[in-house]
Length: 260
Picture 1 (tube, rainbow, N blue to C red):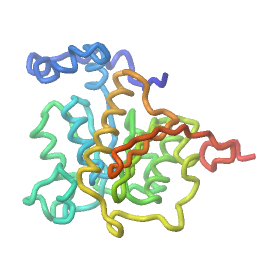
Picture 2 (tube, helix red, strand yellow):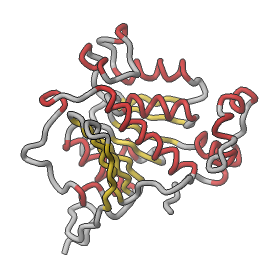
Picture 3 (tube, one colour):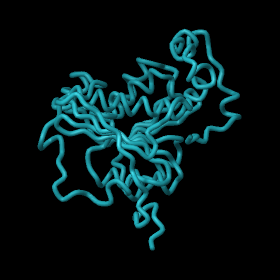
Picture 4 (spheres, rainbow, N blue to C red):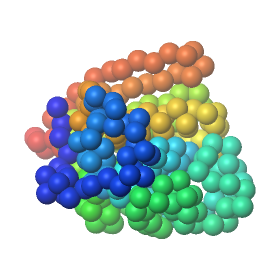
């Protein structure tokens, strides 16, 4: 099973206060997490790209779980239309940079978490520099240009990627570590790609898929269960059904393939 590269020295230095022991009590009694898993969460550095519909529940649950350092990358500001699904924000946040408002709300939730705000648009030119400083990356953005930049940077920097997407009533979550990579699944942007702005999305679906992404992150960091590595979970909210499919490595993939 995949292992994140969090040094044993870092883990050895993580100690819990009495307040943290009470805060994380439900994790500490879980056999699959326990003290070692919670120490790994506290030592982890996790980047969330996109502080929107998916990034909002991801950030809330990872902060609540006790991830030590949480990076947020988003250049957008909070808009009224965001509040239908982006549960991290309030009406008073309208007009504020998302990463600024998010950092304030996350600090109020858990002051033990250090939030690093990247108020920038992530693209091919800066993605590797941003990704490099983290152990794990979660991408919840809504455009393929950013998704490809983040995915390519993760492969180049040897980082595991948890990717999520939603539209209308359907969502998906996948975990990519080396091969297959995200480009093996989506080699190029579909010509008929839809956006939530154009086709809409039910607000609660963002919570479902964002929570699944956060859950995969906790499993990866705490080494619990079997992550969705090399698999894609597809959820149909209207039908109330989910299915998981395996992703094959593409030998001709422009990012992780042999290039032959």
